[in-house]
Image 1 (cartoon, rainbow, N blue to C red):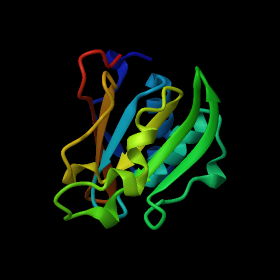
Image 2 (image 1 turned 180 degrees about the vertical axis):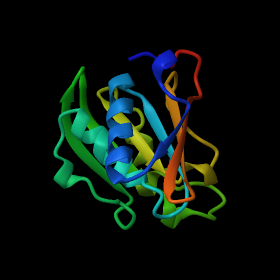
Image 3 (image 1 turned 90 degrees about the horizontal axis):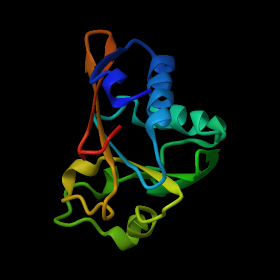
Image 4 (image 1 turned 60 degrees about the horizontal axis):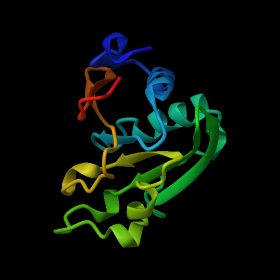
Length: 158
């Protein structure tokens, strides 16, 4: 799959479709990539991460929302990617600057063998790693389904 064949928008009628989108995103991932997940509560951000982790060879049963612990890491085995780090910054909304050390995000985004998925990144100036490829996913509701808008923020996204 290439960036050209990847939909910039998708309708996700159920949780399975959201997980499938995560699996499609997994195909595009390289070690060091960042996935920024935006959207309201219950939009499917953690469900998408479950699909990503599963497609990269991890255990879907381990994936849960890290809202209270802020950061979870899942062992995977695919294409040089050894770990998916999953941060949920919801509880840190409204702070003038993100306390990266509190979350541990500063260390994990520099992990050269990992993909890092971050829920609720929009409240802070992003402090991504040097040269990291960044994929932004905006999940939302429309009628009886969820929607996703997906796009690379960097020039070398495919």
